Every structure is written in structure tokens, then in C-alpha cells.
Amino acid sequence: MLKTFAAILLLSISARAEERAANDLHQAAPPAATQSAMLAGPPIKAPRGLDMKSETSSFHVGAMMGLVSLPRPLDVEIYARLNDYLFIGFSYSDFSAFVAGPLLSAAGVSSGPTTVRLDQFTGFEGELRIFPFCGSFFLGSSFGHQSLKAAVTQSTETGPQSGSIDVTTLYATPRIGYLWTFGPGFTLGLDVGAQLKLSATRNVTLPPGASQETQNDTNNLVDVASNYPLPSFHLRLGWQY
Image (cartoon, rainbow, N blue to C red; front, side):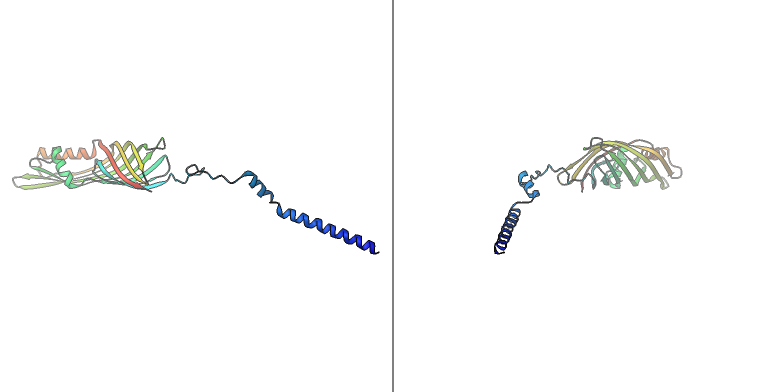
């Protein structure tokens, strides 16, 4: 009986020792995932500038102001570049009276006994541009509404006599140009084109007994505003986000 009890005790002690040794070995060994990571080596980080996912967006909004603009010198535009290919914008342009006076005289529509005063020459445009090469070069066109209002005064022996000109024009301006971006967001735009009449409404009132010269001057101004193609040129500076 004593021998049997001693044998059982020895077997129990041996099994317990084997179990403890197995537990110690399991704790000392790293998990399979850790072993794979150790065999694979430290993680490799992609260098900056070579990330697979770009951090920049092709959608931008911005604003530009004309440095040199035709046919109206004062020009501002707000726009959204939807992606690398498409651009939509809205612009306002104006021909200030202090600039118009000398130009009207030089064009011969304000001379001698007839004086033409330009009260309003403004334009509103919506524009679409396509960038076929996803770069700076673009093709596009704007569609706009132009308003011209002027007063015609003729000096006569009985005193000055006045008339008025009111011309509204719907037009399209196909154009070609470049839009460059520098640094954090500075933009420089350059484009050329031609403003072409789509339709026009004219309301002209001449002074009673207006001379042929006054009629000619008035007709010249109306034709310039509503019939003839006008040159379109813009050199703009702006900022986009």
C-alpha cells in the first residue's frame, strides 16, 4: 500500500513538472503574428511626396481682377474650377466715364457741336472653360448681357438740344488663353477672343431737328455697341483656394 501511494505521488509530481515547463515555453515564445513581423523586419514608410493617395484636390474657387481688359477696362471675376478639365465663372465689367470721354472724342463720335456723354457701359458674363490637357491652356466661351446708355447733346443757335441712346445686347465671346497658378494660390490669367452679338435692343431719341452730323455720330455709337464684333482681351491677377 505504501509503495503504491509513493508511486502515484511520484507520477503526479512528474506530470506537474512537465505541465509547468510547457507553460513557461509557451509564455517565452512570441505569437505567430509577432514572429511574422519579426521575420519581415521593421515597417517601411513611404517617403513624402510619393504617397499613393494624393492630398491635393482638383476643386478650387477663386477670384481675379483685370489688370488690362477690353472692351471694358474695369473687370472682376469669381470662379470655380470643378476639376482638372472644367471651369465655370461669373464676371462683371464696366467702362468708367472718365476713361470713355477721351476715347469717344478720339473715335470721332464726340466732336464739333455734338457732345456724347457715356453714362453706362457695363457687362455681366457667365463663362465656361475647358482645359483639354489638364494644364494651364484652355478653350472657352462666355455668354453675357451688355448695357450701354449715353446722352447726345447738340449745340444750336436756340440753345443745346439733347437726345438719348439706350442699347442692350446679348452676346457670346469665344476665347482662348492660359490660367497659371504660382506658389500657394496666386493666379495669372491671359485670354483673347471676340465679343459677337447674338441679339440687340435699341432705343434712340435724337434732339428735334438734329443735324446729319449728330445723326451720324449717334449711329456710329449704336453700331459699335450693338452690331460690330468687339475685341476681347484680359490680363488678370487673382487668388484661388
